[in-house]
Length: 444
Image 1 (cartoon, rainbow, N blue to C red):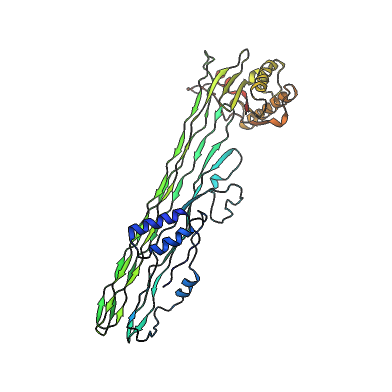
Image 2: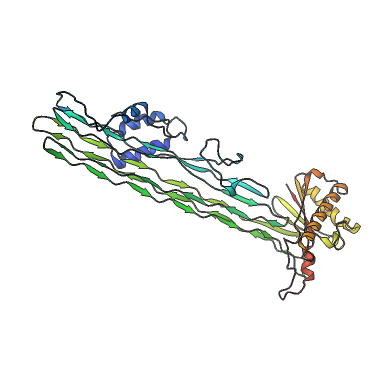
């Protein structure tokens, strides 16, 4: 019985084989380790090959047929190599393929992890569990000194490659003065099993030796749910205070996922000696080992925005390490229900421009428009967009900032910093005034 040939293996493959040898004590480990030692210089992501041409020829043998070996007086059972499991490697999920499938044809990006507008997606590396092929141990039916010796074919199996999608981190965009929601997607490690088998007993010439039944092994996978933290925004100061407390978005994490290793012991059948001197050799089927799987956990740090007051204006500035958001009340910039900038607004806008030029000479600028809840949704949405665009044009024509740096967005009444109504349902004029605003956010 010939040994199955393998493609280049990683050091992980050799370590798994060492464990298999120590645990299962198979007789052919020395040969296999020698071949694996020569292969460890290859790629760590190389998959196990299929059966070699020698195995293919062996697979075509008819185990139920017979062959006359002449008067040799003995027969040898098949010899087979020790078994080790597939290795696991990390491979990063692709992000540019429109179908979400990697060029290798094995990796898939979940729908929620596809890049798109309004979010930033960071792919976590996938874990690839390489395919495993264990050749069937075979012995053809034969005749020895006129005695028929039944053959057998047991122990073979194929485990297909498994890819554990590492998931992704999704950071949602947010209006100025807010920290966007963050999501970490779930991860699932699939179940796995190794089939059992029975090495049959043998009865020849009135004598019998018992075979052996080996149970398979199976292990449950692991599913770790995703986690998220919502968007948080700065809140307006109280009526009697100019102080606005900082806002903090807490950290978010996903635990690691794992799957235990699997093993199947070897099986053997003793040799048989007949009274006429005929000898039938022992039979041996190697054990098998599949290593465990581990997917690392994911952690996203918390983030905050600290508030300060810009002197001599009615504008508040909120900053962190990468950006500053300037809150300009709409009542300072515009007349009621209008989108034309009032002349008196120049003082406030010039102060903002001076601060941006000093602290953000390059980088992007986003202008967000907001309204209160008076009026219908469509009208408020349009008004917020028009006011954001009007501020952009002022920053370009009067502030001398390049239009290429500036984008705008209107949120209508959807992102409020204060309730538009009081707890009893009555109107809240102070709250509505704070919700009517334009937020200019400059980012490094």
